[in-house]
Image (spheres, rainbow, N blue to C red):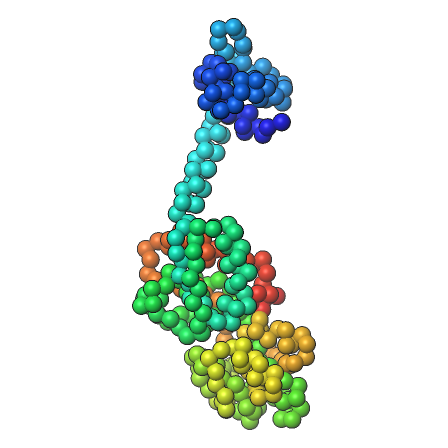
Length: 306
């Protein structure tokens, strides 16, 4: 048995054309199918919708009422179908995205694969770099960044989700140098610096319970512009690292790294989408952003959330 909407469409065609044969030709089905669809609809409703004579087909009173009501529903459905078809027509072409290296390697491949299944006509050019790119100068449609609030006034941006950060070191390093008991103890330890960190050697921490804030000038014997490299250096015993939790989660689980100063939190950073100053976001850009939000919302472990 065919779907109810299709049976209603056939019924409306018969009513408009006053002929099963003419409605069948319009629907590109056989007259017997057209007759069966209407009969099924009448049986489902428990009323006679059409009066059949040898010369023509006419509506009963119930059929007229049903035709008026159902036509509105079918018209709205057609409008919805057209909106979707038009949006699919717009969702094609090239989408140029810049993203951090670690996010691109760890999170984006599965997201892009799912996106391409839904939108096969969108070609993606993904540039992976931890440096803040000039979206306009480098000709990107959008960029994903893990950082504090953007300061570039020429771009527009949208927060996607909070990215928790943690202080970590290897058990061997802590055994040899002692585990810090307060933020000030970090000044006596080797710390691993992230080159793009705005604060440089000044690490600002806030107590999770009291709200007290402290800033410590740390010693940075090694700096690097990639979080994964810093996580590996910390696991090798080179010092303390302050990194997004999703970069160190596996090493925390297997014991290669240990959290320190758990009551002290660094300033919040976010996964943020940045765009050129569009008047209205292009459909492919907005759709990709929402897809990223949905994917991460469904699996917060992607960026270290609970």
